[in-house]
Image (cartoon, rainbow, N blue to C red; front, top):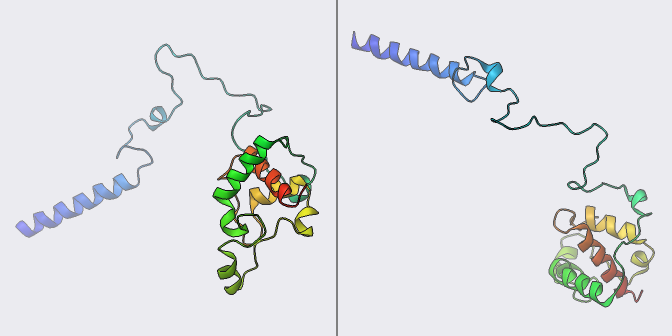
Length: 173
């Protein structure tokens, strides 16, 4: 008789566990689920208004551009000694390991990358880089290209524009 009670208890616990696993809410059994998940207000709180459908956020996600669209962008950061210094600092922290201390594509990662079958980091004084427009360089910094990783989530838009100023300075522009 004890075995029968143990088996019955196990079956009952299993059924309860299965019933709670099938629950839609935070509680094992929602008696009034339509009230639990309603948009609610606290006492003396005014109703929350939804933004208009045509509203545009002023903060948040950055606008995504395609490469051809980015070509029309111009650098909003003016080239000054201060902005060049800031671009140099950002470059030394994030880019010098691949592109080298002076931006000539000879960083410490170059040799292992080439030996592994990759392409060498680009020399910023090359014709390939000089022929690119500022917006294209900004797009490449944001989205990455080839073995270069994207820096869109690591650097702010202004920091990436500072890097464009540094890249231009390598080729004497």
